[in-house]
Image (cartoon, helix red, strand yellow):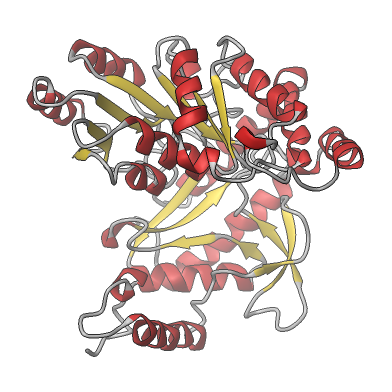
Length: 421
């Protein structure tokens, strides 16, 4: 089967009729070569410095040696991966405990820092100390917990824009998707599911990872509970960024104590690795003994002590959140003034929607040439007509960093005509 590389996306290679696994890989390898030849291979670039507002990166433009770029690829929104107190906590824990946990949590791999982390993240959301379950990744916090909670007699009702980890978590159950942030679409599904399924769970994001927009949590929560369903909110991109005290999209709508399940990741504002589920203590206990990816995976390393410190810093140093908010406003307004389409973003995730996938890839290449490191996002991550440059802002970006990016976009628009003008 011949695939037109000029029109292909990564999804076209998932299952090629008539080709076995090795043959599919060979065709895909040729496609990667095609992307490299066209200067569109802006993925898996090698970073040679820590994540931050500037990064040293080996790119097709830099050759074999790294070059310094203004970076918009990191979800380290508050810059805590480089915070001296977070680093100090990690170093101290490694000196005390070593580099690994050595076992799964049920059979010797549950350490004092794991217990403290569970209690800290539960307290952060105003829940009792036994309300949290931690996972080694944010991805498995969603996929593993959902596979334990929802089976063939149940149903997951998900927003079309939820993370891939949610879709994987629904593989063992029934699933219906409602239109993104569409209350009427959600209600139609809830009405139909009310008497047909045992457990009904609505699953949404607080902040959506591609458009940066926020779910109408109060309306969704009221509707969900009216029809006897539970509500799970993954606020990975809102925690630490939104709300008066950084508790995320749920705090904005006064929903912190009204959501049945809160999930999230430690890899963004908390500057490490891992994930968590916040639930009723009885449900949390169930997951600790029934969630397969939790009980059969080794626990996180002693570096988790840095997560505990990062959780504390959300309250102790609120100025980072204020600086991030200033950067968001300045950069978003600058892009809009250039006529660029930033969609409905209300967060630190700022897309520049271009639409045409090849023009989007060309924009990513031109940004790299201008010293700006961004992510071109194409189908299947977004719809084909919604290709965009996705950027994440940090509290540690300076006005000079933002202006450099704005100047680059202004120049690119003159060449590629990517604005709405």
